[in-house]
Length: 180
Image 1 (cartoon, one colour):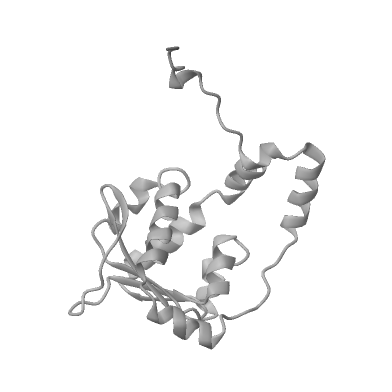
Image 2 (cartoon, one colour; image 1 turned 120 degrees about the vertical axis):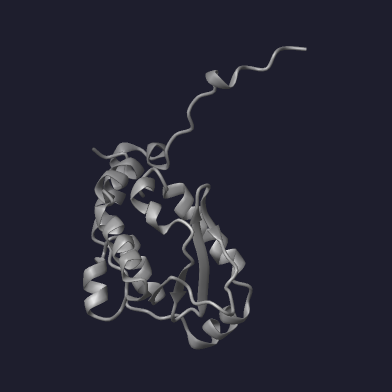
């Protein structure tokens, strides 16, 4: 029976941007720079349905995404003051309430406590959270136009906002698109 190759000899899988030919990659990148998210809200019947569903799957997706970013684009040492605090993200128009915390092992889902409020609640619509993630809007603009709300520990809220502001989104975009 032949020996299996060592894992050290396996090739690195290509980044999604490397799979596209150069000219096509450049055209897609140029078009994506000019794309703006349209104004929308999740329809009320869909939001009523989503609010009745278990919140664990979307919370798990959120914590997975945050853990992938932790240490890569979200500096772990900067976020250390969040450790052990109950955080809640409310997607107002979708009826989602996502409860999570930062532990020594990363972000984890937490069960909401009936007798205790979260330390920090961040609320916005689906469209505004997407615009924030894509850097189409900045947190200050959303906050001062009352489209992004933070309740609870203001120091934690400022830490989250400042961390988002400090992320080098252009460097991340370069990695994803393969452009320098």
